[in-house]
Image (cartoon, rainbow, N blue to C red):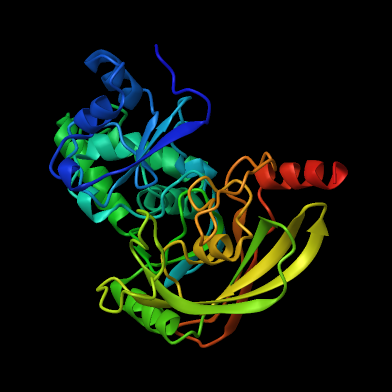
Length: 363
């Protein structure tokens, strides 16, 4: 099959002309040398992302706000519940060690997708009920629970056969007690600590604490160059003029998407031509850290989206980072019920740890 040339992916920023078209049609229009069969195959073989999320539905309708990535190689298979690790669990909330390559929550446009389609690329929010069930029940207990139902919907106690629909309904009912509610989000390719509430009331309370800056979030990142300690405090908009999120242009004062964004940054370590830094968020806007760093001229290693300065100058990335080098390393808050101070830390995950080791050896 025809492959995307040169770079690991092509990036398509859509326009008004694309509104309402299908994903397949948009890709076919931009890859004129491809047949419809090649276009369908690229989508089905996990080579297409929409707004950072894998999409296997060629009939999905797109808008001018969507950003499409067409990868040269197939993306990894979905993360399984067994890969989810917990830093903290109680009856009120959980702190999850989010792996890279999984979306935090389902985008609004995909909320009503059929269950089978969601299973092709589950979000962390959708993986957590099963992960929590496995956390609370031993393997033997889980096996006992499955035996009561039977692998094919047979109730072992009554010998009665359940329909596949009834069997799934029973399983959904069992998992309902482990439902979670996202309080904040991390980008798909960002790893690290993430907070989920276990009840709507706790989600509301934690949301208030985030807005009141009562939750401390510290990220570790590796960037190009050697930035000095500083605070970023500006207004970000959905489209700064080149199809990307970024700082509000000076001549645009009435953008409805405008939001204030504050990031406190300090260097931790010099690694040759790169630096490891720590970013503390005071606000939590989409791509906030990535935007602030790129517009300063110190883009994240491995960031293929925000790889230009504010003046539009592209920064060549020779770091060979396996993904964007951004990790949610510290989370501090008071317990929403007991008010006990809690602090969680997570080291670099394996992929970035090995990359950093090599980077230090070659600096």
